[in-house]
Image 1 (cartoon, helix red, strand yellow):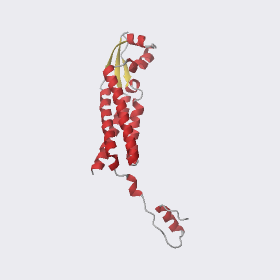
Image 2 (cartoon, one colour):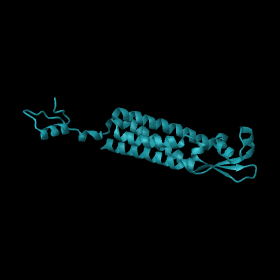
Image 3 (cartoon, helix red, strand yellow):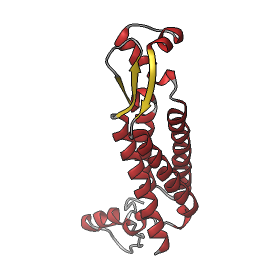
Image 4 (cartoon, one colour):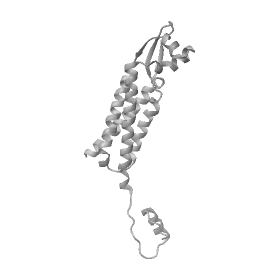
Length: 192
């Protein structure tokens, strides 16, 4: 019972984190106040952190993999979830604490045609964050927790494939066509 609860909890945490990550990648993370008097520029999460959407999709793929694989691969995929969560946590904290110019530089270059740190620094009056990086930060904490829980408890999860396995039963005497199909259904080769 405890293993089933741990499995469902970890899968749910990773699923929520991946879903929130994909959603936040399309939302505005940063708003650039321009010094040239131009209209404020909104920068989406996938522009501020280019690996945001792919790694969020990785978290969603990890959920499916964790639900299907055996105990050894569960630990591998749980470790991947922890590494992805840690990387995204660091990248998101960088955006929240530093408001780096490189996170908004491609959007500024596209909007103004200017490039280079000197030109873009002179163009930026200030960079403000929205609520989305904070929500993404919560998602990465959930991803870390879900991955760590899966890593610790993966060996005790019940495998789903056992209930569909059949044990071959030996057959004595001549085998007719119907019995041959039955042998195939049980997983044995009737031609041997």
